[in-house]
Length: 156
Image 1 (tube, rainbow, N blue to C red):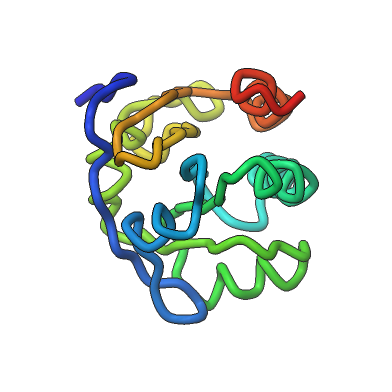
Image 2: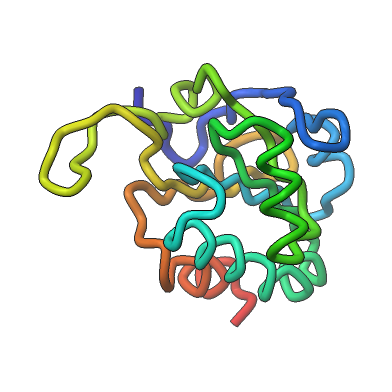
């Protein structure tokens, strides 16, 4: 399944270390929209780089009316450890059965060290206040893609 700009974003409610987070609640809290990003595994080098990029850009994103949520298959306890270790103040949600990742097209075949495996395809989606997708970034690199999102949202 491939979601494109203008299509409705799949709704979700997922567990976090502090309870749960839903797209509906995040949209209520954001004037401009929600940045939803999918990453393979907490506390791995690439995912740490990406999360820290979002952390370092959070003030400018929220200043422009966006909220951020990261989603991975990790259990809430590991997400809490990751957030604490890296100073992440945005919600990290657990999608252990990857149902939400599948709904967004962020789960599927990918190459990992030359082998074909099934897993999270690093992706970021910007959901507009009306619940439709404004941008979809698939198969992105951990380094540099947050800057691209900021640029295309007119933040830089």
